[in-house]
Image 1 (spheres, rainbow, N blue to C red):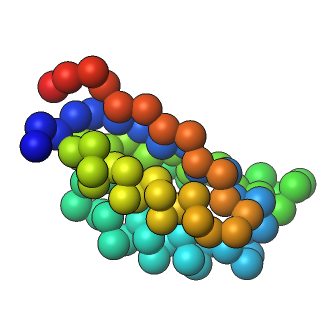
Image 2: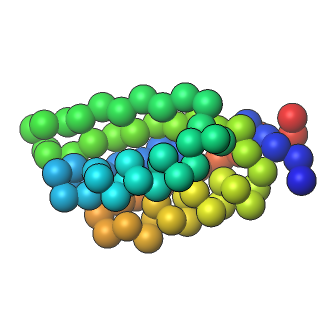
Length: 83
């Protein structure tokens, strides 16, 4: 399967409670993550993470699917149309 460039935006609503599980998942998929930027927003006790990935649709779907199952986590993503 062809790998494509993509990104994911992740919002963690309660970073103290949920961030450890999110980090476990991201570590599991570390081989497809090209870049990661995380910004804590202390005022609202949340966090925003942006990922850049180089992955097949199956790999990226597995990553975003697992993240989306975590309570208090929202994920939006997109993949390039080709290479």
